[in-house]
Image (cartoon, rainbow, N blue to C red; front, side, top):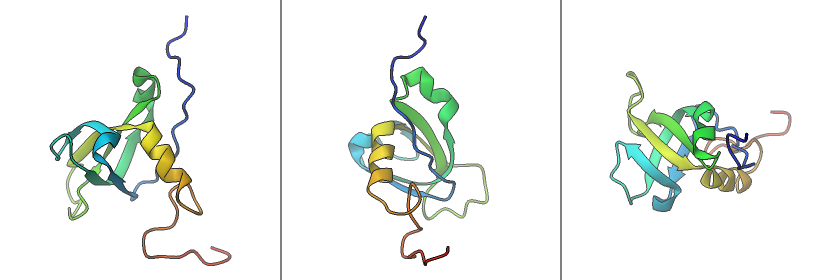
Length: 108
């Protein structure tokens, strides 16, 4: 018996990643009305729950970009794994590339 059919892989999303999602990249969330772009600083990706969604969706937990982060995460969204893969493929270096505004140097 197969528990899930999808062979989609979920790219690693390091904690601290600024994740900017288009309105159609996520389905449900906390901290933002549906149907709008959603931005959060990632603290955790709940990969263990992805198989419940045939690896097509994953819960991403974090903070608003302007949040001090001195409290439990205040944002979470059910994100399409295709959106995560697309962002990983369009960045250089590590799966999500160097932080914005910083270029990696040889040997780093």
